[in-house]
Length: 160
Image (tube, rainbow, N blue to C red; front, top):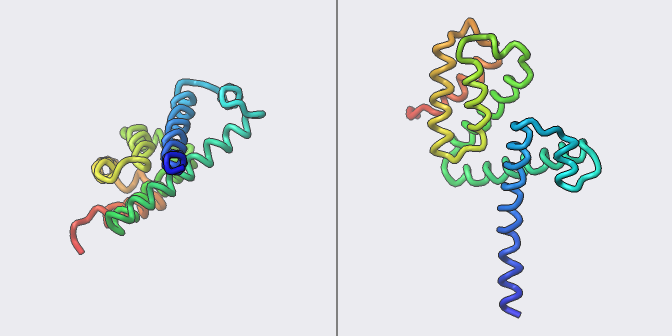
């Protein structure tokens, strides 16, 4: 009976690992050009909407796990990850983002990988994002992006 209980305990870790792998594979397939309908078929789901919803649930669960891990580091890390997520949302809705300044596409891509990054990588990538936004100049950034950048700088600051 002890062996069975031990194996049951290991199932949770296996499920988390599989969820992470599934999300990564979905994202890689989408990046490679797969449609949501193709992903749905591969996952054995009935529709593209079901595949999109599955990806959203996996991403939300990953973000929740990340936030929980961040709390073990510092409040600033939690604030930094939240600011990066906010920046991602602003970039996603800004239809003119890619043309705002020469490094806009690089900032978009860096932000996209930052919010799922480990704490050390999140800090480093966020510093690069801020440097690129400063180089772009405030006049090229919408006010909400300027506000998020200020929050990121505060979270990155070593001053109390």
